[in-house]
Image 1 (cartoon, rainbow, N blue to C red):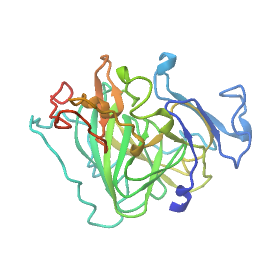
Image 2: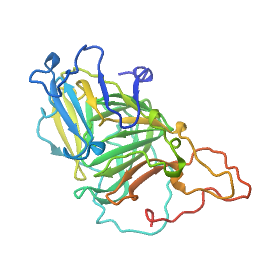
Image 3: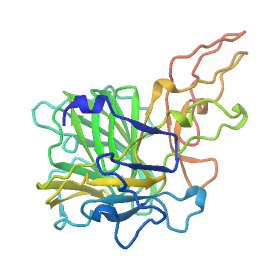
Image 4: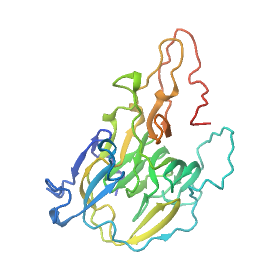
Length: 342
């Protein structure tokens, strides 16, 4: 698939919306009035992908129905991967209270390193089994994934390209992500990455929760990341009979399995659990016009809440260009030691 195909993609807008979409190549692929009819249109298979417990309150319930050519469970058994540079087991790591800051990590020295081979862990905390915590990873690659896909059974990925664009094919459709944009691929969604040259970036992974927009509080109704600026792909499928390798990150380890068809065979889908991208240049910055600097939470794009009200497992924060107008001078942003970082 050429990069030109990704330059002209269409998206559905909104954050956490109820979406419904079908590939226009197969008309009437979405069932009417039923999620799982005895016979789906065009002989498709209905599958529900849940991002929350079935009994979660309606406002917190995440699920989507997918209508695909072949069931996703049709594959050979998973086997452990070799030479893993990835971990979520932080119990053996020696902690340090020192501050750290990293330059971009080096690009691969050899050719033929794709996205899944170029993943490695930097740091993290918590536990993927008890479903509470986070991990920070990097990727560095120089080749596209060919007949490969991966999905995360432990948590959500928030991917931040630093160099090079990512053309991402998911079960829900296709997404292009450039530097200064981010993409979130929720738990359990298969995806594959093609690149146009040497590429690298960062990944924030959260366990047991999903990213959401922060509350605005006294800011009011508007500002920060506006829901309408988030973009979710429209349905797109490929019907390919060829051997694909599926990588699964499960309880901190990587496994792989073979199957005889493309995992991107979803002809139509509907629901509120799907990947999405966001352009950080659309962030509406809040700032003071008096004498002091607001709390850094005004720069939070997305937050992953914990079970404790008001406390996040992780916040994704940016410091975009902004006017700093004040009567008396101050130092923005100020040094901030808080509950999350201590």
